Image (cartoon, rainbow, N blue to C red; front, side, top):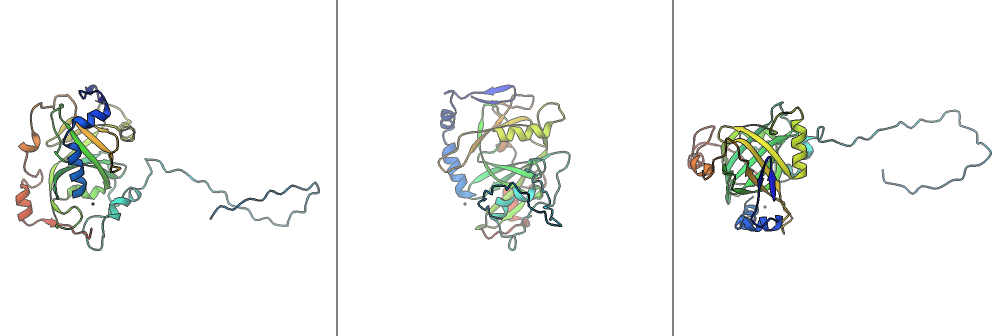
Length: 281
């Protein structure tokens, strides 16, 4: 059973393994999507103390006491979280942001970018702890609670990435046309002052519930983590909860074909004068 919020989402088979199987072409989608994206310690010596007390030196150097603190999710560096993002890019050749400069606001933001790389997909990005947690969704989001959409988690992206719409040249990392398909703010469903902490806990647990306040997507959703695949990647399922914003049978991806920022189609963005990012990967 795949659960989220007050609404339970069941697979007919009733098991996680078979739930993945029921997704049918999702396994192939995941494979195609992956194709489109590519002081040392010293041994101590035990010394027996003598009964006769040795003379103490006139002055004994004091060793300063240091305290090592474990990094917490609240204080973790955005730069550290962006290490994989940076590893994949050569910033001497790309105009993509390195990240780490933009600060998180009190209101968390989200963005969905339609991305025509080798395979068309949608990138869902949710701000948390100074970065955008990101998933590639091959079929895009669905407002029909009966639809379970495959979502492959990818590297964290910088917050500055949220405003990009344009072209990444073919042959570059993620090369293709990028559209700002939806954006807005998000939070943990319901009321409570501990919303951010509950989002952190849900993400870590693999039961990531959130509520979107976008121009096209609104209401409660859940990302459910599944078992890892044979490539060592962990797929998730993106599911819309049954609420006032759910629309059974409605295909919002097919209905909404333009940018929320410029009202352009993918073809218009590709053919028009657009911002271009370059990468050597």
